[in-house]
Amino acid sequence: MQNIYSGNNQTPETPKAASTPKANFRRYEDPTGEFTSGNLSRGLWWVKHKVLLYRLLVGALILISAIFLIFSLAKWGIYLVGIPNSNLLEKQAVQFSNYNPAIQHFNPVPLQIVSTNLFQNGGSKVDAVSEVENPNAGYIANFDYSFLISGTSTAPAKAIVLAKSRTMAAALGLTEISGSSGAVLQIKNLQWQRVSPHDIPDPKSWQDSRINFSISSTTFENALSTPGLSGNRLAFVLKNESAYGYKQPRFYVGLYNQDALVGVMPLQTDDFHSLETKNIDLRNFTSNLQVQNIQVFPLINIYDQNVYLPPER
Image (cartoon, rainbow, N blue to C red; front, side, top):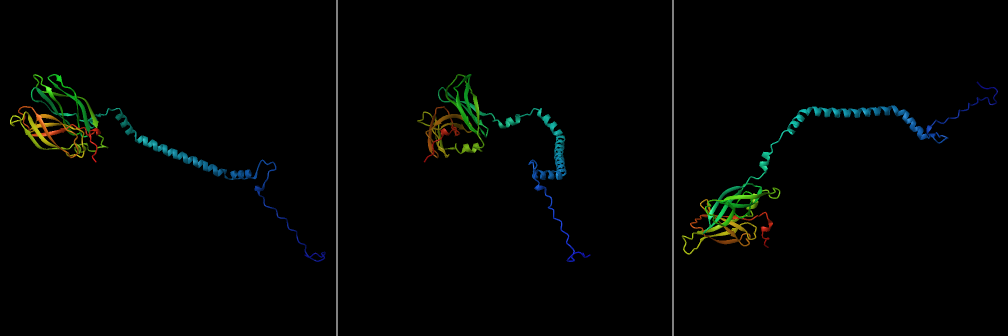
C-alpha cells in the first residue's frame, strides 16, 4: 500500500540486521592467563574421545590376557604330554651307565710280546731279545724295559714302538748266568702318546713314507764253512728309499732261519741321506749260526724333529 503521506510516494527500505561473527573458542583469551585456548582444545578432545579410549584400553588388556592364557595353556599341554618322558629321564638319571665298552673302544690295546729269546753271542756272552708289537693305529708306545734272567734283572733301557708297528727290545752282550734257560721281558713306565687325527689322519701310511729302508744283495758266510773267517760275516746293501735323511740312525738286524729268529745284531750308521745307499758288513761270533734272511728294525722316533737331517739344497 502506498504511503499517501510520502512526498515521493515510495515505500521505505527495511534496514538489514548486522552480521554476527561465528563463535570460535580458539580465540578465547583468559584474562587471568591461567587457562589457554590450547588447554581448552585438549579438554574438548578428551571429552569427545574418552569413551573410545576406554574401549581401546579394555580391548588391549583383553588381547594381552588372551595371549598369556594361550601361552599358559600351551605350556601346560607340553608339560602334561611330557610327563611320561620326564619320569623316564628320572629313572635313567638314577641308573648307572656302563662306560666300559666306550673306555675299551678308545683306550689303546696292550702291547703284544711276540717272542722272547736268549741267544748265544760267542764265548760266555748271551743276547736277550724280545719282539714287541703295537697293534694300535693311533697310539705310540714309549716304555722302559729290562730282562729278568734267573732272578736277576738287566740294566734298564728305553724303547719306542710306532703305531701298527713291530720293533725289538734287546739287551746284548750279557754275561751268561749259570743255569739260565730263558728270559722274561719286564715293561715299566709305559706311556701312550696319541697321534692327533687332525694332524696325521693315517699314522701308518705317514710312518711308512718316512721309514722306508730296502735290503738287497744279502750274503751270509758261516765261519765254520768259510776258510779265513774268524767270525760269521753278514753283508748287505741298505738303501734309504724315503725322502727324509736321518742323523746317525740306529737299527737292529734280525737274523732268521726260515721264519725263526735266531739272532740279532746292532747297527749304527753315519748320517743317512735320502736315497743314499750304504754297504753294510757285520760280524757275528755265534757258532753254528745259519741265516737265510734278515730284517732291519729302525730305532728311529720319526715324531721327534731332532732325528731329521736338514733339507738338502
